[in-house]
Structure formats: structure tokens, C-alpha cells
Amino acid sequence: MHSLYYGSLLWPSAGGEPARYPPLSGDAERCDVLIVGGGLTGTLTAHALLAAGLSVCLIEADRIGRGSSAASTGLLQYSNDIMLTDLLSQLGEDRAVYFYRACKDAVERLCHLAELLPEDIAFKRRSSLYYASVPADVPKLRKEYETLRAHGFSVDWRDEADIRADFPFRKPAALITNGDGEMNPYRMAVRLAEQAGVQGMRIYERTALQSVKGSKGDLSCHTTGGIIKTAAVVYAVGYRPEMAGSDRIAVKLGRTSVIATRIVPSLADWHQRWLLWETARPYLYARTTQDGRIVIGGLDEDIRHPVRSKDELAPYAAGLLEQARQLFPGLHLEAEFAWNAAFGESKDQLPWIGEDPDRPGRYLALGYGGNGAVYSMLASMVLLDAVQGRANPLDGIVGLGNRRTGPLK
Ligand SMILES: Cc1cc2nc3c(=O)[nH]c(=O)nc-3n(C[C@H](O)[C@H](O)[C@H](O)COP(=O)(O)OP(=O)(O)OC[C@H]3O[C@@H](n4cnc5c(N)ncnc54)[C@H](O)[C@@H]3O)c2cc1C
Image 1: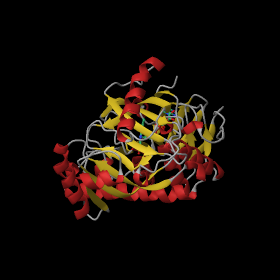
Image 2: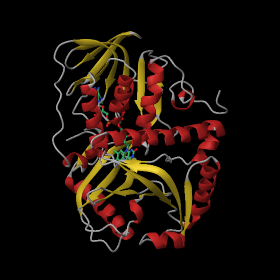
Image 3: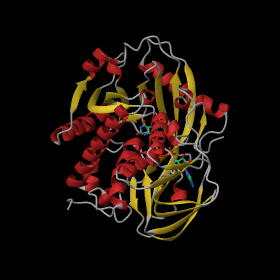
Image 4: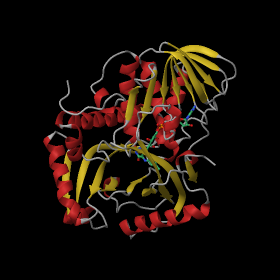
């Protein structure tokens, strides 16, 4: 049983068997940066560091992409769990808008990168329909629409009749964000690792980091297979924050559930196959796949470990199937895959990305939140600057030092 999820996952089931990498046996050659964790965050960061000419080594305790990236639903959205309107109060206008623009830019970069990767990552550009779950949420959503629009984001508004014209369900109103996307997150990590391998990155699977000794520029990383000497370590360890060894991060771990239906003969009822989510917290999130399935997730709970048996998973799968049937009553839906997975959020709803001020040379890349994949891309950009000694305007927002508010300098 995997400690990050339980059940049958959709993404690894599609496509051929990915490349395997050997475990480390004996000490390895020195590198500029050691990346710990071969999920989306680790592989995207590897991609950025290699492109800058750094020598990179990556270790993965299990198999590439088999952590939370394999359990993700693969929605690529710049609009965050925390609305821009709320982030304005939390961070001040400059920082909040800068952060949202950085997320939009990260989605754009993911889209460009995805378009260059093999087709099995099933990338597609999509808009998102963010609907008000209840009439009382409409004013808040309308304000978000106006705030996004005022800051130049491409958004549209739909009232109840507009939604009814496009979908079989009734919702009081919705905000449409344009420029989002979808993909198979597992295949993306696998393909990025393959590409990085071709570019000379050394990859060791079934090799876990145990401890790091030494000082910045001269670190000795003790792993289950031997020692790796490096100038810097990136902890891209996903929802295993204890592996990153920093006291500075405040994380709330819970769990979420997902089903993928059998292939549906026609999804004509699903307007432009938009990504769907809602204002309720916790929220439902739904999308389609290229082969014509519906993937729907939600029913989040504040329980740290995933369910442990078929019997425990069954009510969540049934609940999600019921939700999908309510949204699309004309479709004959049956669940083919169902899983329950660990999920992490930071207390301020922002990722943790940057050098640990208490342990120079150690960099964290923890993209906690519903936009985890977008945060993975942000991590790759911020950490490229960080390991090369450059400041990034996001440092004071996502970094591990004091997270700041007010105008950006
Ligand atoms: C059900 C679900 C749905 C989601 N849906 C979305 C979505 O629609 N859109 C979105 O943007 N995000 C979504 N997310 C979040 C997104 O999946 C994650 O943010 C992202 O996959 C995290 O990637 P990662 O590389 O940081 O973590 P992981 O993929 O978990 O990779 C971390 C890796 O580190 C390895 N590791 C840990 N410790 C060590 C060690 N000591 N030594 C070596 N290796 C180690 C693990 O084995 C693991 O493979 C979802 C998450 C879940 C669970």
C-alpha cells in the first residue's frame, strides 16, 4: 500500500510502462544540485536547472511520478483556492496581484512545455467554470470577477440562464477563467524525467534521502544507496513535509477522493469540456479526459492518512458518482477508477518555495494547495534564481523567511 493514496489510479493505467532507473549503489559523482523527489515538482525543477547548464542529480524513494502526482486530477488553473479578492487583504494589492500574475504565467509555461512533450501527457487548453455553489456566494464571486478583470485577467461572467444554456445543471452564477489547461500529471513527470535523463541528469529510483551533512556548497547527502556530494539540495518531497526537515512551514494535511468514470459515448452536454469547480469549501472539481471519461474529486476531510481498504473507499466513490450524476443526469455514469489521497495545504494558502534560512544550501519546493502543479512550476522558476544567487520578487511571498505584506520593492 502507498502511504500517499489508496485505490485504483487512472493515470498510470494509461500508456506503456515508463523507463526504470537503477537505485544508487555506492557513492555518486558530485553534482551542482541534488533534487530529492521525482514528482512534478522535482522533474520540473530539474528541467529548469538543466536548461541553465547546471549538473543535476535526482533521487526518488519510490518510482518517478508515483507520488501525489499520480493521484492528481491534472487541472491547470491560475485561479487559486484563495480568491484574489481575499489575497488582496492578506498580502496587499501589489503582492497579491503579482502572485496571481505569476500563477497565470506558470500555467502559460506549463502549457508551452506540455505542447513540446509527447502526446501521451494528454495536454489540452481549457477554460474553467467556477460556479457559485449557493445563491449567497454570488456577490463574492461577482466581486472576484470584477477584481480579476480590473487587473487584466481574461475572465467572463455567466448568470443562471447562461449556464443553463450550456450545461444540464442549474447554478446561480459562474466566473469563467480563460487560459487554463488539463493534462495527465503522472505522464508529465515521467516524460520530463526521460528528457532530463537524455540531457545528462542522473536519476536513481528506490533511493531515499536519509540525512544531509556539511555546509552550503559542500553538502554530503546520505541516501539508502550511498553518498551524493553536492552544492545544494532541493526538497521536492510532496506531502511528506517532515522529509524537508524545516520548522518554518505550517501545513495542514488532509485527504481527498477522486473517481474516473468509464468512457462515456458522448460528452456533448459538457460545454467545451471546461474544467469545473465551485465556491463551496471543500469544493468539487471535475474535468473530462481525452478518451471521454469524467474525473471528479472532492469530499475532502481533515484526516491525515488516506483510507486503507476497499470498504472504506466505497462510500466516497459512491458519493462522487452521485455528484457527477446530479451534474449530468442525462449520462449513464459508472465509476471505473476510485482513489483517496493525502492532500496538503499551507495555513496561509501559499506554497513554500525557497532556501531554508536556518540551513543554507537546502531549498524547499512544497507546492501545497489545490494548484499544486502550478506551484511546482513556480518552484522551478524561483529555485533556479535561488540556487544561482539571484533574488526573485516571489521570495517575500512564497519564501521561508518572513512572508511579507505591502508593496513589492
Ligand atoms: C487527489 C489529488 C488531486 C489533485 N488535483 C490537482 C489538480 O487538479 N491540479 C493541481 O494543480 N494540483 C492538484 N493536486 C496537487 C498536485 O497533485 C500536487 O501538488 C503535485 O502532484 C505535487 O507534486 P510533487 O512533486 O511536489 O509531489 P509528489 O508527486 O508526491 O512527489 C514527491 C516525491 O518525493 C518522494 N520522496 C519523499 N521523500 C523522499 C526521500 N526522503 N527521498 C527520496 N524521495 C522522496 C516521494 O516518493 C514522491 O514521489 C492534487 C493532489 C491530489 C492528491
